[in-house]
Image 1 (cartoon, rainbow, N blue to C red):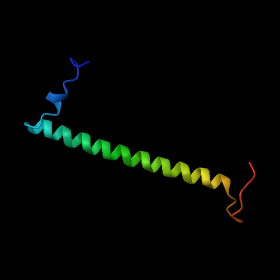
Image 2: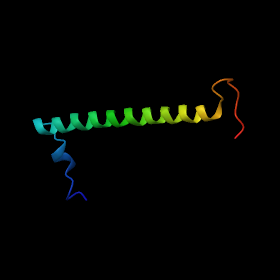
Image 3: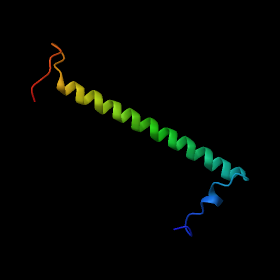
Image 4: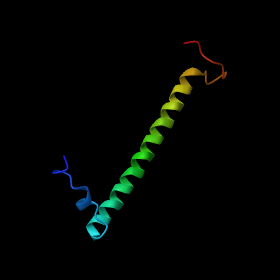
Length: 62
């Protein structure tokens, strides 16, 4: 696998291209974390809405 993916060559801190790749990877990871947090919160809200009655705020029997 190390023959196909040269980590040091792609993310070289001495070259402009390497530093750009580091910046792109950083932004991609931040975006991925943002999307995962948003999806998790939406699923939590969805689960909570199924467990409670909207009008009377009592738990529903499932």
